[in-house]
Length: 452
Image 1 (cartoon, rainbow, N blue to C red):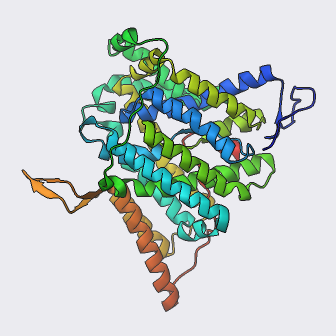
Image 2: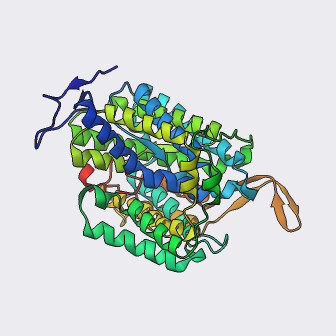
Image 3: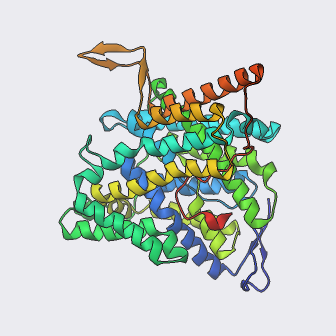
């Protein structure tokens, strides 16, 4: 395992770069590590707020997952594992009646499959991933996951989200926009988190915040862990998430390679395996599924400090915070209008990141083999096509069976049609070819341009 050597005299000079196996003075490292906690804070907490998962448990498995990631990758790859937005849609679809057990089982299965993929990549290389998911399909999957959540942002069906408090929602939304364009550096990068703070204050002034649970919570206590409920009917809902997590991890490894000037291709399999293990543990104990975070990559790009020591510090701080129940309850008081507004921005950004993947890889949409599967998959995902196989009809509703939601239906249909049309086109000589060759994915929403 790589050890940290002191960078120079422990300070960083203008234009210098601190490599993953280096460190600054420990006082500076503590402050920089805490900054990474702030960077992951907004997105990591938004997922349990939307899905109803316990916040302390999510924070605990986020910190634990980060430390496991560092161990499994040999302490070579700087990265923070936070809550993945790719899980929101299947979690909401499987969490009927407020019971998170089935959703946790789906998260656990996703993690296990991702870990298996990571082991295969480590042994056989990653070229088969590009063949299975060329950029046209990666972009489509990311886009349909983001836009499939549009209904959750509005929230009328569940009397939540933006719909529940439009004034608060607009204040939050406008604050996010203004902070983004008015400020540079870290403040600009934290526009969603700071916009949520402004929206929270607006909700507080309108009497929309209830502090009763905060007052009754203890200062010190264990996170509330929840075991999964075995139910293979949710498997189909979570399968597409594996494809997104693969794209996220591959994109992040390549981004870190660009920033540090080091080739991390041989670490790709370990990164996928590590995220799979972290997600499996989160599903087993009651936390949100994890992924590598672009927010923290953005912070590294801004500071030029890539030391893995920062993530040991950030992961440890996250675990310590998870043992403060009052802190978790305080976060849980964020009202629906604020969450809906933040979701409006985040889900839209996630969707448009799919378009970014198309653009950066020069996907050729004059080729029907690219155009038609992507078009069909997007409509199925956005309209939330869903089908149930098996089960029993009781009072007009289907009970039991395996349900395929919009994300699953759109993803599987797009991939199947793409590879079918590709094969037929090659056999018939009608395939126009594809200009794109590699996956580029930054799924978690942030200002990532500096990371490239």
